[in-house]
Image 1 (cartoon, rainbow, N blue to C red):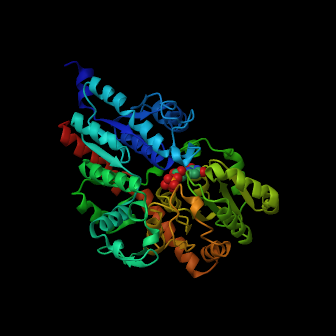
Image 2: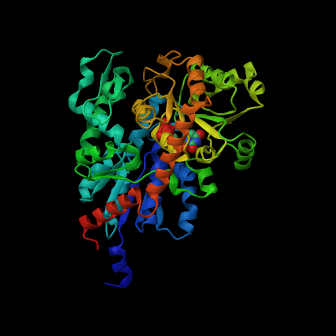
Image 3: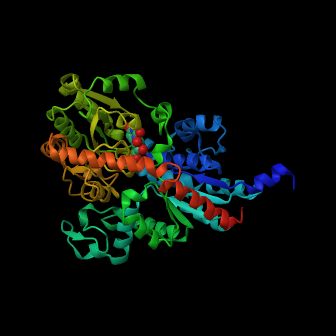
Length: 493
Ligand code: UDP
């Protein structure tokens, strides 16, 4: 065997397949970068518009010689009745097209399989989004171990596991609360706070979750965007459930140290980096509330008005990332008609579109993060050492709230009692009133021992996060362990 060829045979190769939703593809791209930093050759399956959005964040890494390449396939918009350029959940003009989007993703399977078929040697591992069930079939077909990633932490995985196993929620009324059995902490939830799979989901959704469970159980293992020290007790317990094939390798966002990477992570920032920094620099340390509700939020304008009024009456400087999917125009109209921006301009910065979240959170002026408790955002808040006001909306966000407020004790809840399923926002009225937001913000920001303790704890978790990813840290070691595991599996020395 020629030297180059033998090297090729000895280099571990991961095929990485992200899902088109920012909360999923952002951390998946980070995983690709981390793998490459550990000497693994990585090929990322992508499509044209997604590549434009997230590809550039890897430019520097690739230029510096990291072994990352893209495998771009055309996206079948027309065939699936999607508008051109719609390759990601946050671009969907209409929620009813979500199913079509998933089908369009599934149609990529043939092309991915042709690629794998013609490759010699074949990839050693397929690391794909858990929601792309077909990738599990592809892995089986070619007898390649498949690692899944679904963007959730061990705490959530364990809650879901326990609920599936015990079905404790089945015997309680919609508004009643119950304790999840067998967890290290006493975690109490209402049935109305549970994700789709356990709470009034349609049959389609329930069927999908059943298939997802089977697909995840068949997978070789799972990578988690979290770190062990943050999830004391929960990470170990989940490890037992999965027979050790769990690797906590986060916080993934910390793989971007460079300001320019932070700014372009996930999408093109809607605000100039310098304008954003100038504004933040002009604010007092720890004084600003940053309110951002993730990438796919479609919250009703009437509900957003409550939030806006609370931010205004808090008398704190604030950044509000204004986004409501297709309803953005309505909230913009309210802002204009009410003169909200004018009224608050001395202490508010409204960002329309995509905020450079990592950059904002890492600025010393930020004193609180009002978040929807999406796991990426929550963990980014932890990394920045910023206490949070928690306003969960859907999926596993109510679990994340419990972790932040009750277990880690670095957050204050606005007191949301019901999930507002994604895509069903119109069915809900105003769930959290302006007064409730205001109260939570006040508690979070009120000077005194309580705030200091919360801030101290948040800073400690932040330090632990940085330590976890350093050489010798828990996440660093877990990444090594994962790579060694796949090497052993494929007999690469
Ligand atoms: N994000 C961002 N700017 C925005 C909105 C979101 O950078 O204006 C990023 C955020 O930093 C996080 C991701 O998008 O990495 C959102 O993921 P999360 O799990 O928090 O919520 P989701 O969008 O999936 O509901």
